[in-house]
Length: 195
Ligand SMILES: [Fe+2]
Image (cartoon, rainbow, N blue to C red; front, top):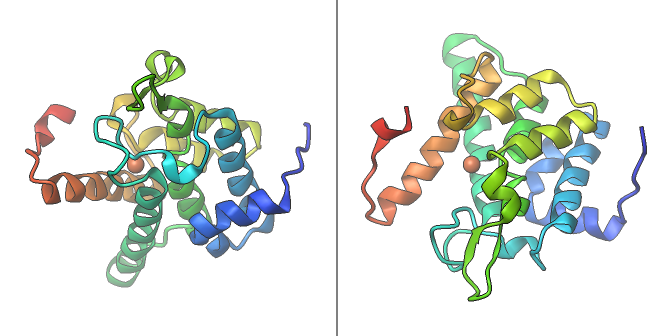
């Protein structure tokens, strides 16, 4: 396996946008999560990570991708804390943090700016299903199957339902965060269409 060194500058940049990376207790996992963000960013057409949108249908002025990822990560940890306190079921926090931080990282390469300056699907994003590339990166780094599974099953498009507590929490808080944004924007929620 090739070990790719990432500049301290890039690591500091990604950590400043996603400070939740520092909550991961396993140092190797923490470095891998930052490295995957750096690699996907360098492979993408975005000059700055802040420029990548959460949603290609909405303009760049809409919520940036990294802010959605931060919200989902915080929501996942909050949900895990309540689930543990009220049900006595313990979600592995490092697995949950890594999966939440990585679940949408492939959007960096799935979207791009078109000639008119609007964000839309990239040629890659049109051909390869959402989250497949994030899962590929996680596998490439040798991350545990539980993290790969949570990345894959976060979206209902994959047709693989969540089969672990960490994946279940991520799945729901991701849709929660998306639907909160849509509701706040006055958009209709067609929840039944997802199934
Ligand atoms: Fe998401």
